[in-house]
Length: 214
Image 1 (cartoon, helix red, strand yellow):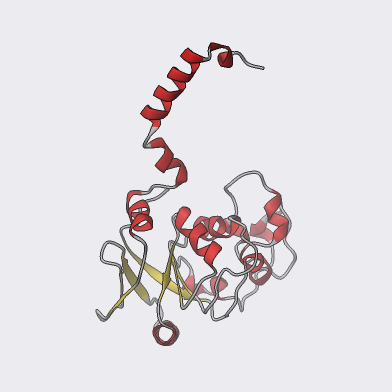
Image 2: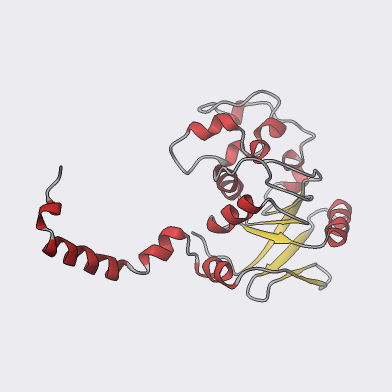
């Protein structure tokens, strides 16, 4: 998992409340057994004018010019500004995979669905909860200034506006540690690989028949 320390990025505004995970990555794309390749289908039903299916050549599909991520001023955005209850609906982990693989490092909203929030943290996407009045003002700032960027300082747990104003956010110490050090669940387990190997060695010495393949 990519480490997250201090990130400055272009902000894209998704001015919709209650965006569910089926809108983030529609159900037909969940058939894949891989954890990669979901970025081109992020917000597929809003992003394209036709219906997307796995295996389609997305570069040849007609884009919806009115959708925010298709607008030239937001190309390359790595921070998504959203409204309340972002990520509601089913618990599919494909949603944060799609957001991360599109290039989004952080999400800012007044609230997130609980399971989605935790899935983001496990996959290197930082969901930041800020007061609704602050989020409202950020939407106005993004609309008013082309190329609007925010700086997210995770060690200090603040979002910094271009003018220097700071907004603090909460995050559990454990999840903060994981993001700063780039540790997903597999990475956390591998920190104990020597103990795991020693246990397996002792176990096979005690039960040698377990070494034989069935």
